[in-house]
Figure (cartoon, rainbow, N blue to C red):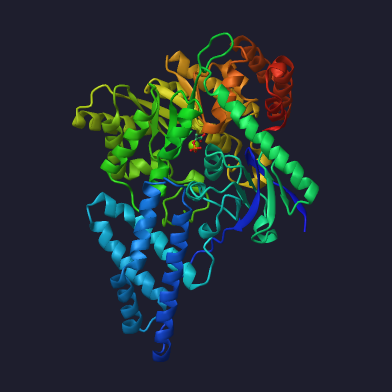
Length: 586
Ligand code: PEP
Ligand code: MG
Protein backbone atom coordinates (compact mmCIF):
# COMPACT_ATOMS: atom_id res chain seq x y z
CA UNK A 1 0.00 0.00 0.00
CA UNK A 2 1.24 3.49 -0.88
CA UNK A 3 1.99 5.66 2.19
CA UNK A 4 3.43 9.17 2.23
CA UNK A 5 5.12 10.43 5.39
CA UNK A 6 6.78 13.64 6.48
CA UNK A 7 9.84 13.66 8.74
CA UNK A 8 12.82 15.90 9.42
CA UNK A 9 15.14 16.46 6.46
CA UNK A 10 18.58 15.52 7.80
CA UNK A 11 20.98 14.80 4.99
CA UNK A 12 20.25 15.99 1.45
CA UNK A 13 20.00 13.59 -1.44
CA UNK A 14 17.55 11.24 -3.06
CA UNK A 15 17.31 7.50 -2.52
CA UNK A 16 15.04 4.95 -4.10
CA UNK A 17 15.53 1.42 -2.84
CA UNK A 18 14.33 -1.48 -0.74
CA UNK A 19 13.58 -1.50 2.96
CA UNK A 20 15.96 -3.28 5.32
CA UNK A 21 14.54 -3.13 8.82
CA UNK A 22 17.05 -2.97 11.63
CA UNK A 23 16.10 -4.94 14.73
CA UNK A 24 17.97 -3.47 17.64
CA UNK A 25 16.40 -5.23 20.60
CA UNK A 26 19.23 -6.03 22.96
CA UNK A 27 19.92 -9.70 23.51
CA UNK A 28 19.33 -10.54 27.13
CA UNK A 29 21.14 -13.67 28.16
CA UNK A 30 19.69 -15.73 30.99
CA UNK A 31 21.17 -18.81 32.60
CA UNK A 32 18.72 -21.68 32.13
CA UNK A 33 19.39 -25.10 33.56
CA UNK A 34 18.67 -27.82 31.01
CA UNK A 35 17.81 -31.46 31.63
CA UNK A 36 20.09 -34.28 30.43
CA UNK A 37 17.83 -35.10 27.51
CA UNK A 38 17.99 -31.50 26.19
CA UNK A 39 21.76 -31.09 26.27
CA UNK A 40 22.30 -32.58 22.80
CA UNK A 41 19.63 -30.27 21.36
CA UNK A 42 21.36 -27.23 22.91
CA UNK A 43 24.65 -28.32 21.40
CA UNK A 44 23.03 -28.61 17.98
CA UNK A 45 21.43 -25.18 18.35
CA UNK A 46 24.84 -23.74 19.12
CA UNK A 47 26.50 -25.43 16.11
CA UNK A 48 23.66 -24.29 13.85
CA UNK A 49 24.06 -20.67 14.99
CA UNK A 50 27.83 -20.83 14.43
CA UNK A 51 27.23 -22.15 10.93
CA UNK A 52 24.69 -19.44 10.08
CA UNK A 53 26.99 -16.75 11.46
CA UNK A 54 29.89 -18.04 9.39
CA UNK A 55 27.81 -18.13 6.19
CA UNK A 56 26.62 -14.57 6.78
CA UNK A 57 30.17 -13.32 7.24
CA UNK A 58 31.42 -15.20 4.19
CA UNK A 59 28.67 -13.65 2.12
CA UNK A 60 29.53 -10.14 3.41
CA UNK A 61 33.16 -10.81 2.50
CA UNK A 62 32.17 -11.94 -0.97
CA UNK A 63 30.15 -8.78 -1.51
CA UNK A 64 32.95 -6.44 -0.50
CA UNK A 65 34.21 -4.11 -3.18
CA UNK A 66 37.04 -5.57 -5.13
CA UNK A 67 40.20 -4.25 -3.56
CA UNK A 68 38.51 -3.41 -0.23
CA UNK A 69 41.22 -4.05 2.32
CA UNK A 70 42.27 -2.83 5.71
CA UNK A 71 40.45 -2.79 8.98
CA UNK A 72 37.15 -3.93 7.63
CA UNK A 73 38.60 -7.05 6.07
CA UNK A 74 40.68 -7.74 9.19
CA UNK A 75 37.53 -7.78 11.29
CA UNK A 76 35.78 -10.17 8.94
CA UNK A 77 38.75 -12.51 8.69
CA UNK A 78 39.22 -12.56 12.43
CA UNK A 79 35.54 -13.31 13.06
CA UNK A 80 35.46 -16.09 10.47
CA UNK A 81 38.62 -17.57 11.96
CA UNK A 82 37.03 -17.59 15.42
CA UNK A 83 33.94 -19.30 14.08
CA UNK A 84 36.09 -21.96 12.43
CA UNK A 85 38.14 -22.50 15.58
CA UNK A 86 37.26 -26.03 16.66
CA UNK A 87 38.85 -25.61 20.06
CA UNK A 88 36.63 -22.64 20.80
CA UNK A 89 33.51 -24.50 19.67
CA UNK A 90 34.53 -27.52 21.74
CA UNK A 91 34.92 -25.28 24.78
CA UNK A 92 31.33 -24.07 24.40
CA UNK A 93 30.02 -27.61 23.78
CA UNK A 94 31.85 -28.87 26.89
CA UNK A 95 30.47 -25.93 28.90
CA UNK A 96 26.89 -26.79 27.90
CA UNK A 97 27.41 -30.41 29.00
CA UNK A 98 29.39 -29.75 32.18
CA UNK A 99 27.23 -26.91 33.50
CA UNK A 100 23.96 -28.21 32.06
CA UNK A 101 23.05 -24.80 30.69
CA UNK A 102 21.45 -23.30 27.60
CA UNK A 103 23.58 -22.49 24.54
CA UNK A 104 23.17 -18.70 25.02
CA UNK A 105 24.62 -18.79 28.51
CA UNK A 106 27.47 -21.05 27.44
CA UNK A 107 28.57 -18.91 24.50
CA UNK A 108 28.29 -15.74 26.55
CA UNK A 109 30.37 -17.19 29.41
CA UNK A 110 33.11 -18.56 27.16
CA UNK A 111 33.43 -15.35 25.14
CA UNK A 112 33.46 -13.20 28.29
CA UNK A 113 36.29 -15.31 29.71
CA UNK A 114 38.22 -15.01 26.44
CA UNK A 115 37.77 -11.25 26.23
CA UNK A 116 39.05 -10.89 29.81
CA UNK A 117 42.26 -12.58 28.66
CA UNK A 118 42.45 -10.28 25.62
CA UNK A 119 42.11 -7.22 27.83
CA UNK A 120 45.32 -8.11 29.66
CA UNK A 121 47.38 -8.58 26.52
CA UNK A 122 49.66 -5.67 25.56
CA UNK A 123 49.52 -6.42 21.85
CA UNK A 124 47.57 -3.65 20.02
CA UNK A 125 46.24 -6.01 17.34
CA UNK A 126 44.78 -8.35 19.95
CA UNK A 127 43.28 -5.41 21.85
CA UNK A 128 41.59 -4.20 18.70
CA UNK A 129 39.96 -7.61 18.44
CA UNK A 130 38.09 -7.02 21.70
CA UNK A 131 35.34 -5.03 20.01
CA UNK A 132 35.12 -7.71 17.31
CA UNK A 133 34.62 -10.30 20.02
CA UNK A 134 31.69 -8.33 21.34
CA UNK A 135 30.02 -8.14 17.91
CA UNK A 136 30.75 -11.80 17.18
CA UNK A 137 29.04 -12.80 20.41
CA UNK A 138 26.01 -10.64 19.50
CA UNK A 139 25.86 -12.22 16.06
CA UNK A 140 25.86 -15.79 17.40
CA UNK A 141 23.22 -14.90 19.98
CA UNK A 142 21.00 -13.32 17.34
CA UNK A 143 21.34 -16.40 15.19
CA UNK A 144 20.48 -18.61 18.15
CA UNK A 145 17.26 -16.66 18.45
CA UNK A 146 16.58 -16.76 14.73
CA UNK A 147 16.82 -12.97 14.53
CA UNK A 148 17.86 -11.95 11.03
CA UNK A 149 21.18 -10.32 10.55
CA UNK A 150 20.54 -7.12 8.64
CA UNK A 151 24.06 -6.64 7.35
CA UNK A 152 23.94 -9.80 5.28
CA UNK A 153 20.76 -8.46 3.63
CA UNK A 154 22.30 -5.16 2.64
CA UNK A 155 22.78 -4.55 -1.07
CA UNK A 156 23.50 -1.46 -3.14
CA UNK A 157 19.72 -0.84 -3.15
CA UNK A 158 19.17 -0.93 0.62
CA UNK A 159 17.54 1.83 2.63
CA UNK A 160 18.02 1.20 6.33
CA UNK A 161 15.00 1.70 8.60
CA UNK A 162 15.61 1.84 12.35
CA UNK A 163 14.03 3.12 15.52
CA UNK A 164 17.25 4.91 16.39
CA UNK A 165 20.84 4.77 15.20
CA UNK A 166 24.01 5.76 16.98
CA UNK A 167 26.67 7.68 15.09
CA UNK A 168 28.83 4.55 15.31
CA UNK A 169 26.05 2.52 13.64
CA UNK A 170 25.89 5.04 10.82
CA UNK A 171 29.62 4.73 10.23
CA UNK A 172 29.49 0.94 10.08
CA UNK A 173 26.39 0.75 7.86
CA UNK A 174 27.93 3.35 5.54
CA UNK A 175 30.75 0.90 4.97
CA UNK A 176 28.12 -1.52 3.71
CA UNK A 177 26.93 1.01 1.15
CA UNK A 178 23.41 1.69 2.44
CA UNK A 179 21.89 4.28 0.12
CA UNK A 180 19.55 5.91 2.63
CA UNK A 181 18.58 6.02 6.29
CA UNK A 182 15.16 6.60 7.88
CA UNK A 183 14.51 6.55 11.63
CA UNK A 184 11.65 6.91 14.12
CA UNK A 185 13.55 9.33 16.34
CA UNK A 186 16.39 11.86 16.02
CA UNK A 187 16.79 15.45 14.93
CA UNK A 188 18.98 17.70 12.79
CA UNK A 189 22.00 18.02 15.07
CA UNK A 190 22.01 14.59 16.70
CA UNK A 191 25.40 12.99 16.14
CA UNK A 192 24.02 10.24 13.94
CA UNK A 193 22.51 12.97 11.76
CA UNK A 194 25.82 14.82 11.57
CA UNK A 195 27.70 11.68 10.57
CA UNK A 196 25.08 10.73 7.93
CA UNK A 197 25.41 14.20 6.45
CA UNK A 198 29.17 14.05 6.48
CA UNK A 199 29.18 10.71 4.70
CA UNK A 200 26.61 11.96 2.18
CA UNK A 201 23.87 9.39 2.94
CA UNK A 202 20.36 10.79 2.22
CA UNK A 203 18.60 10.66 5.58
CA UNK A 204 15.19 11.49 7.08
CA UNK A 205 14.61 11.24 10.84
CA UNK A 206 11.86 11.79 13.37
CA UNK A 207 9.11 9.79 11.60
CA UNK A 208 7.83 8.46 14.95
CA UNK A 209 6.69 4.99 13.81
CA UNK A 210 8.21 4.20 10.44
CA UNK A 211 9.59 0.90 11.86
CA UNK A 212 6.02 -0.22 12.53
CA UNK A 213 4.78 0.74 9.06
CA UNK A 214 7.36 -0.93 6.82
CA UNK A 215 7.84 -4.53 5.79
CA UNK A 216 11.32 -5.67 4.75
CA UNK A 217 11.56 -5.57 0.95
CA UNK A 218 9.05 -2.69 0.50
CA UNK A 219 10.06 -0.13 -2.11
CA UNK A 220 10.88 3.18 -0.47
CA UNK A 221 11.65 6.64 -1.79
CA UNK A 222 13.31 9.20 0.43
CA UNK A 223 13.91 12.85 -0.26
CA UNK A 224 16.57 14.11 2.12
CA UNK A 225 16.04 17.72 1.01
CA UNK A 226 12.37 17.86 1.93
CA UNK A 227 12.15 15.15 4.59
CA UNK A 228 9.52 13.17 2.67
CA UNK A 229 9.32 9.40 2.58
CA UNK A 230 7.04 7.42 0.26
CA UNK A 231 6.45 3.73 0.75
CA UNK A 232 5.53 1.66 -2.28
CA UNK A 233 5.18 4.55 -4.75
CA UNK A 234 3.09 3.95 -7.88
CA UNK A 235 4.56 3.45 -11.37
CA UNK A 236 4.34 7.08 -12.46
CA UNK A 237 5.92 8.29 -9.27
CA UNK A 238 8.75 5.81 -9.68
CA UNK A 239 9.61 7.34 -13.05
CA UNK A 240 9.61 10.84 -11.56
CA UNK A 241 11.80 9.75 -8.65
CA UNK A 242 14.32 8.13 -10.94
CA UNK A 243 14.61 11.40 -12.82
CA UNK A 244 14.96 13.39 -9.60
CA UNK A 245 17.74 11.04 -8.50
CA UNK A 246 19.59 11.47 -11.81
CA UNK A 247 19.28 15.27 -11.53
CA UNK A 248 20.65 15.08 -8.01
CA UNK A 249 23.69 13.09 -9.11
CA UNK A 250 24.35 15.76 -11.75
CA UNK A 251 24.09 18.49 -9.10
CA UNK A 252 26.62 16.68 -6.89
CA UNK A 253 29.08 16.65 -9.80
CA UNK A 254 28.50 20.35 -10.40
CA UNK A 255 29.04 21.09 -6.71
CA UNK A 256 32.39 19.36 -6.78
CA UNK A 257 33.59 22.01 -9.22
CA UNK A 258 33.15 24.57 -6.44
CA UNK A 259 35.42 22.49 -4.18
CA UNK A 260 38.41 24.09 -5.87
CA UNK A 261 37.34 27.67 -5.01
CA UNK A 262 39.22 29.53 -2.29
CA UNK A 263 37.41 30.33 0.91
CA UNK A 264 36.98 34.07 0.46
CA UNK A 265 34.27 36.61 -0.18
CA UNK A 266 33.78 38.52 -3.43
CA UNK A 267 35.54 41.50 -1.83
CA UNK A 268 38.52 39.28 -0.92
CA UNK A 269 38.02 38.66 2.78
CA UNK A 270 39.62 35.30 3.57
CA UNK A 271 37.43 32.88 5.53
CA UNK A 272 38.84 29.39 5.56
CA UNK A 273 36.37 26.60 4.95
CA UNK A 274 37.37 23.57 6.97
CA UNK A 275 36.10 20.05 7.55
CA UNK A 276 34.64 18.49 10.65
CA UNK A 277 35.56 14.83 10.65
CA UNK A 278 34.48 11.93 12.84
CA UNK A 279 36.61 9.08 11.52
CA UNK A 280 39.88 9.08 9.62
CA UNK A 281 38.22 7.32 6.68
CA UNK A 282 36.67 10.72 5.90
CA UNK A 283 40.06 12.32 5.18
CA UNK A 284 40.11 11.45 1.46
CA UNK A 285 36.63 12.86 1.08
CA UNK A 286 37.67 16.03 2.94
CA UNK A 287 40.46 16.53 0.46
CA UNK A 288 38.33 15.99 -2.63
CA UNK A 289 35.53 18.23 -1.33
CA UNK A 290 37.99 21.10 -0.94
CA UNK A 291 38.55 21.28 2.84
CA UNK A 292 41.14 23.96 3.57
CA UNK A 293 41.95 22.49 6.96
CA UNK A 294 40.59 20.20 9.64
CA UNK A 295 38.49 22.52 11.76
CA UNK A 296 37.45 19.83 14.21
CA UNK A 297 38.23 16.14 14.57
CA UNK A 298 35.61 14.64 16.89
CA UNK A 299 37.92 12.10 18.52
CA UNK A 300 35.20 10.49 20.61
CA UNK A 301 34.36 8.11 17.75
CA UNK A 302 37.79 6.57 18.15
CA UNK A 303 36.66 5.79 21.68
CA UNK A 304 32.98 5.00 21.19
CA UNK A 305 33.72 2.57 18.37
CA UNK A 306 35.45 0.21 20.71
CA UNK A 307 34.81 -1.61 23.98
CA UNK A 308 38.06 -0.33 25.47
CA UNK A 309 39.77 3.06 25.42
CA UNK A 310 42.54 3.12 22.78
CA UNK A 311 46.04 3.45 24.23
CA UNK A 312 48.46 6.31 23.60
CA UNK A 313 50.27 4.71 20.64
CA UNK A 314 47.06 3.77 18.90
CA UNK A 315 45.79 7.32 19.29
CA UNK A 316 49.11 8.74 18.16
CA UNK A 317 49.00 6.72 14.92
CA UNK A 318 45.44 7.84 14.32
CA UNK A 319 46.15 11.55 14.96
CA UNK A 320 49.23 11.44 12.77
CA UNK A 321 47.07 10.44 9.83
CA UNK A 322 44.91 13.52 10.44
CA UNK A 323 47.95 15.78 10.77
CA UNK A 324 49.43 14.62 7.48
CA UNK A 325 46.20 14.35 5.46
CA UNK A 326 45.96 17.89 4.11
CA UNK A 327 48.63 20.34 3.24
CA UNK A 328 47.24 22.88 5.67
CA UNK A 329 48.31 24.77 8.79
CA UNK A 330 44.89 24.10 10.31
CA UNK A 331 44.64 20.75 12.07
CA UNK A 332 42.33 20.84 15.04
CA UNK A 333 41.96 17.83 17.28
CA UNK A 334 39.13 18.05 19.75
CA UNK A 335 39.66 16.16 22.97
CA UNK A 336 37.18 13.49 23.97
CA UNK A 337 33.59 14.73 24.12
CA UNK A 338 31.99 11.66 25.59
CA UNK A 339 28.53 11.87 27.18
CA UNK A 340 25.32 13.50 25.91
CA UNK A 341 24.39 11.22 23.00
CA UNK A 342 27.83 9.63 22.58
CA UNK A 343 28.87 6.59 24.60
CA UNK A 344 31.38 3.78 24.08
CA UNK A 345 30.05 0.42 22.88
CA UNK A 346 28.91 -1.67 25.81
CA UNK A 347 28.96 1.29 28.23
CA UNK A 348 25.46 1.81 29.58
CA UNK A 349 24.06 5.16 28.45
CA UNK A 350 23.61 7.32 31.49
CA UNK A 351 20.49 6.45 33.40
CA UNK A 352 20.32 9.99 34.65
CA UNK A 353 17.60 12.22 33.38
CA UNK A 354 19.71 14.86 31.66
CA UNK A 355 22.81 13.32 30.09
CA UNK A 356 23.45 16.51 28.08
CA UNK A 357 23.86 18.38 31.38
CA UNK A 358 25.92 15.64 32.97
CA UNK A 359 29.47 14.37 32.95
CA UNK A 360 30.31 15.33 29.39
CA UNK A 361 33.33 16.62 27.46
CA UNK A 362 36.01 18.30 29.56
CA UNK A 363 34.13 17.44 32.79
CA UNK A 364 34.66 13.76 32.05
CA UNK A 365 38.27 14.28 30.94
CA UNK A 366 39.23 16.22 34.09
CA UNK A 367 37.79 13.42 36.22
CA UNK A 368 39.43 10.66 34.18
CA UNK A 369 42.86 12.23 34.11
CA UNK A 370 44.84 9.09 33.23
CA UNK A 371 42.83 8.72 30.09
CA UNK A 372 42.97 12.46 29.35
CA UNK A 373 46.74 12.67 29.82
CA UNK A 374 47.19 9.77 27.40
CA UNK A 375 45.12 11.60 24.82
CA UNK A 376 47.05 14.85 25.26
CA UNK A 377 50.38 13.01 25.02
CA UNK A 378 49.24 11.35 21.80
CA UNK A 379 48.07 14.67 20.32
CA UNK A 380 51.24 16.54 21.26
CA UNK A 381 53.44 13.76 19.89
CA UNK A 382 51.62 13.92 16.57
CA UNK A 383 52.17 17.61 15.94
CA UNK A 384 54.43 18.09 12.93
CA UNK A 385 55.78 21.21 11.18
CA UNK A 386 52.61 23.18 11.79
CA UNK A 387 51.24 23.77 15.22
CA UNK A 388 48.57 21.33 16.20
CA UNK A 389 45.43 22.92 17.57
CA UNK A 390 43.94 21.25 20.64
CA UNK A 391 40.27 22.04 21.08
CA UNK A 392 38.50 21.61 24.42
CA UNK A 393 34.78 20.76 24.42
CA UNK A 394 32.01 21.64 26.88
CA UNK A 395 33.82 24.36 28.83
CA UNK A 396 31.44 26.12 31.18
CA UNK A 397 33.83 27.99 33.48
CA UNK A 398 37.28 29.54 33.43
CA UNK A 399 38.87 27.16 35.93
CA UNK A 400 38.28 24.29 33.51
CA UNK A 401 40.33 26.18 30.93
CA UNK A 402 43.11 26.86 33.42
CA UNK A 403 43.19 23.27 34.71
CA UNK A 404 43.32 21.93 31.17
CA UNK A 405 46.07 24.34 30.16
CA UNK A 406 48.12 23.28 33.16
CA UNK A 407 47.83 19.61 32.19
CA UNK A 408 48.81 20.32 28.58
CA UNK A 409 51.75 22.48 29.63
CA UNK A 410 52.99 19.80 32.05
CA UNK A 411 52.84 17.13 29.36
CA UNK A 412 54.45 19.38 26.75
CA UNK A 413 57.33 19.92 29.17
CA UNK A 414 57.64 16.19 29.90
CA UNK A 415 57.79 15.50 26.18
CA UNK A 416 60.03 18.49 25.47
CA UNK A 417 57.56 19.46 22.75
CA UNK A 418 58.26 23.19 22.83
CA UNK A 419 56.00 25.60 21.08
CA UNK A 420 54.23 23.18 18.72
CA UNK A 421 50.66 23.48 19.85
CA UNK A 422 47.82 25.90 20.31
CA UNK A 423 44.89 25.58 22.63
CA UNK A 424 41.35 26.57 21.77
CA UNK A 425 38.03 26.41 23.56
CA UNK A 426 34.64 25.36 22.23
CA UNK A 427 32.10 28.03 23.02
CA UNK A 428 29.01 25.88 23.31
CA UNK A 429 27.50 26.73 26.69
CA UNK A 430 25.85 30.08 27.41
CA UNK A 431 28.17 30.62 30.37
CA UNK A 432 31.26 30.21 28.17
CA UNK A 433 29.76 32.61 25.60
CA UNK A 434 29.14 35.23 28.28
CA UNK A 435 32.68 35.00 29.67
CA UNK A 436 34.26 34.61 26.21
CA UNK A 437 36.40 37.68 26.83
CA UNK A 438 38.05 36.15 29.92
CA UNK A 439 38.51 32.84 28.12
CA UNK A 440 40.06 34.61 25.12
CA UNK A 441 42.81 36.01 27.34
CA UNK A 442 43.89 32.45 28.11
CA UNK A 443 43.75 30.68 24.76
CA UNK A 444 44.87 30.88 21.13
CA UNK A 445 41.53 30.55 19.37
CA UNK A 446 37.82 29.98 19.93
CA UNK A 447 35.48 27.67 18.10
CA UNK A 448 31.75 28.21 18.45
CA UNK A 449 29.80 24.97 18.73
CA UNK A 450 26.38 26.20 17.70
CA UNK A 451 24.79 22.74 17.92
CA UNK A 452 25.13 22.76 21.68
CA UNK A 453 25.03 26.52 22.12
CA UNK A 454 21.53 26.53 20.61
CA UNK A 455 20.48 23.50 22.68
CA UNK A 456 21.65 24.99 25.98
CA UNK A 457 20.62 28.60 25.30
CA UNK A 458 17.12 27.86 24.02
CA UNK A 459 16.62 24.86 26.38
CA UNK A 460 15.78 22.65 23.38
CA UNK A 461 17.10 19.08 23.31
CA UNK A 462 19.06 18.78 20.07
CA UNK A 463 18.15 15.12 19.55
CA UNK A 464 14.44 15.32 20.36
CA UNK A 465 12.22 15.48 17.28
CA UNK A 466 9.26 16.72 19.35
CA UNK A 467 10.93 20.04 20.08
CA UNK A 468 12.95 20.43 16.90
CA UNK A 469 10.50 23.10 15.70
CA UNK A 470 11.94 25.29 18.49
CA UNK A 471 15.55 24.65 17.52
CA UNK A 472 16.79 27.56 15.42
CA UNK A 473 19.98 29.54 14.84
CA UNK A 474 17.89 32.65 14.04
CA UNK A 475 16.74 33.27 17.61
CA UNK A 476 17.93 36.79 18.51
CA UNK A 477 19.56 35.40 21.68
CA UNK A 478 21.74 33.10 19.56
CA UNK A 479 22.81 35.79 17.11
CA UNK A 480 23.58 38.27 19.87
CA UNK A 481 25.58 35.66 21.81
CA UNK A 482 27.65 34.66 18.78
CA UNK A 483 28.29 38.28 17.78
CA UNK A 484 29.47 38.96 21.34
CA UNK A 485 31.83 35.97 21.27
CA UNK A 486 33.37 37.07 17.96
CA UNK A 487 33.94 40.59 19.31
CA UNK A 488 35.45 39.27 22.54
CA UNK A 489 37.90 37.08 20.63
CA UNK A 490 38.90 39.83 18.23
CA UNK A 491 39.44 42.32 21.07
CA UNK A 492 41.97 39.80 22.37
CA UNK A 493 43.42 39.34 18.87
CA UNK A 494 42.56 35.68 18.52
CA UNK A 495 40.63 34.04 15.64
CA UNK A 496 37.17 32.51 15.88
CA UNK A 497 35.76 29.55 14.02
CA UNK A 498 32.17 28.34 13.89
CA UNK A 499 32.08 24.56 13.82
CA UNK A 500 28.42 23.75 14.49
CA UNK A 501 25.99 22.90 11.70
CA UNK A 502 25.05 26.57 11.43
CA UNK A 503 28.31 27.14 9.54
CA UNK A 504 26.99 24.98 6.69
CA UNK A 505 23.50 26.46 6.50
CA UNK A 506 23.47 28.78 3.51
CA UNK A 507 21.07 31.29 4.99
CA UNK A 508 23.27 31.65 8.08
CA UNK A 509 26.55 32.20 6.25
CA UNK A 510 26.10 35.95 5.47
CA UNK A 511 25.25 36.55 9.15
CA UNK A 512 28.45 34.83 10.29
CA UNK A 513 30.49 36.64 7.65
CA UNK A 514 28.93 39.92 8.82
CA UNK A 515 30.04 39.15 12.37
CA UNK A 516 33.63 38.71 11.20
CA UNK A 517 34.02 34.99 11.81
CA UNK A 518 37.48 33.88 10.59
CA UNK A 519 36.81 30.22 9.81
CA UNK A 520 33.82 28.03 9.06
CA UNK A 521 34.10 24.31 9.78
CA UNK A 522 31.45 21.86 8.64
CA UNK A 523 30.35 18.44 7.45
CA UNK A 524 32.37 17.60 4.36
CA UNK A 525 29.52 17.50 1.87
CA UNK A 526 28.59 21.13 2.56
CA UNK A 527 32.05 22.54 1.83
CA UNK A 528 31.64 23.19 -1.94
CA UNK A 529 28.30 24.95 -1.67
CA UNK A 530 29.52 27.18 1.19
CA UNK A 531 32.62 28.07 -0.82
CA UNK A 532 30.41 29.00 -3.77
CA UNK A 533 28.22 31.19 -1.58
CA UNK A 534 31.21 32.91 0.03
CA UNK A 535 32.62 33.69 -3.41
CA UNK A 536 29.30 35.30 -4.36
CA UNK A 537 28.64 37.58 -1.38
CA UNK A 538 30.61 40.52 0.00
CA UNK A 539 31.65 41.24 3.56
CA UNK A 540 30.25 44.76 3.23
CA UNK A 541 26.75 43.54 2.32
CA UNK A 542 26.91 40.78 4.93
CA UNK A 543 27.60 43.38 7.64
CA UNK A 544 24.56 45.35 6.57
CA UNK A 545 22.35 42.22 6.59
CA UNK A 546 23.60 41.36 10.06
CA UNK A 547 22.99 44.85 11.37
CA UNK A 548 19.41 44.81 10.12
CA UNK A 549 18.82 41.27 11.41
CA UNK A 550 20.04 42.20 14.88
CA UNK A 551 17.40 44.94 15.07
CA UNK A 552 14.61 42.37 14.64
CA UNK A 553 13.07 40.76 17.68
CA UNK A 554 11.81 37.32 16.63
CA UNK A 555 13.41 34.31 14.96
CA UNK A 556 10.59 34.30 12.41
CA UNK A 557 11.27 37.89 11.35
CA UNK A 558 15.01 37.35 11.21
CA UNK A 559 14.73 34.20 9.14
CA UNK A 560 12.25 35.75 6.74
CA UNK A 561 14.36 38.89 6.31
CA UNK A 562 17.65 37.04 5.78
CA UNK A 563 16.20 34.65 3.22
CA UNK A 564 14.49 37.38 1.29
CA UNK A 565 17.48 39.64 1.11
CA UNK A 566 19.94 36.88 0.11
CA UNK A 567 17.69 35.70 -2.69
CA UNK A 568 17.01 39.27 -3.88
CA UNK A 569 20.63 40.32 -3.80
CA UNK A 570 22.46 37.23 -5.02
CA UNK A 571 19.76 34.86 -6.19
CA UNK A 572 20.72 35.24 -9.84
CA UNK A 573 24.27 34.09 -9.11
CA UNK A 574 23.26 30.82 -7.43
CA UNK A 575 22.23 27.54 -8.98
CA UNK A 576 18.46 27.09 -8.52
CA UNK A 577 18.97 24.39 -5.85
CA UNK A 578 20.82 26.87 -3.61
CA UNK A 579 17.96 29.28 -3.81
CA UNK A 580 15.59 26.41 -2.92
CA UNK A 581 17.72 25.51 0.09
CA UNK A 582 17.91 29.10 1.29
CA UNK A 583 14.17 29.49 0.98
CA UNK A 584 13.21 26.19 2.61
CA UNK A 585 15.87 25.11 5.12
CA UNK A 586 16.17 25.73 8.88
C1 PEP B 1 28.63 21.76 18.55
O1 PEP B 1 28.13 21.55 19.65
O2 PEP B 1 28.24 22.66 17.78
C2 PEP B 1 29.74 20.94 18.07
C3 PEP B 1 30.38 21.25 16.98
O3 PEP B 1 30.05 19.82 18.77
P1 PEP B 1 29.17 18.47 18.72
O4 PEP B 1 28.18 18.60 17.60
O5 PEP B 1 30.12 17.35 18.51
O6 PEP B 1 28.53 18.44 20.06
MG1 MG C 1 29.11 20.24 21.05
